[in-house]
Amino acid sequence: MLNQRLQVWIEGAIVAALCMVLSMIPTNIGSSFTISLGMIPITIYSLRRGFKAGLFSGLLWGLLHFLVGNIAFLTVSQVLIEYVIAFIFAGFGGLYATKLAKQLSENKTKSVLGTVVLASLVGCAARFFWHFIAGVIFWGKFAMWGLNPWAFSFVMNGASGLATAIVTAIISFMIVKKYPAVVIGK
Image 1 (tube, rainbow, N blue to C red):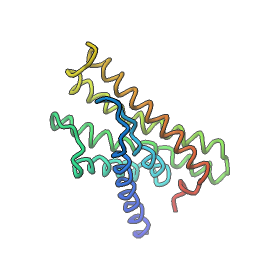
Image 2 (cartoon, rainbow, N blue to C red):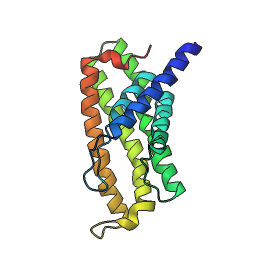
Image 3 (spheres, helix red, strand yellow):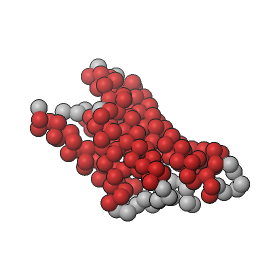
Image 4 (cartoon, rainbow, N blue to C red):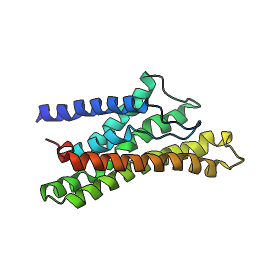
């Protein structure tokens, strides 16, 4: 029992490192738009290991930004929201882990793929909600085009979150369709 729990946490740390590596692939367009490729492994891991493990791995992913010096620092509260809270919420796809396991055991392939897409969307929405909040509170004063902070944050974080969700859903869908065992936790 202890060895299996340890394996889950070690796997989560490895996934967080993979997320960080994928985050370093340049997908930025301008200063505020990016596609976060790290959401793909965190989504698959969260579906494999569950909600708590997904939150833990998301936290590690957020903290790894500090180690590699990949943070934009305005204030302590902004950093906590964008690199701790937001990345913890990236694991929210794990809310569907039990449902997915049941669908897999019943061999409901179409339902499995729908759940993977839903989990991808929920995890991305949960994470980017916090980036949106930080955008309004902290980044709004840098708004381009004369937009108010709410509109600016919605446009920038909404576009990034939507693009990330679409890419995450498509790639996670393809991975699980080809290799369904990747989401079967043992």
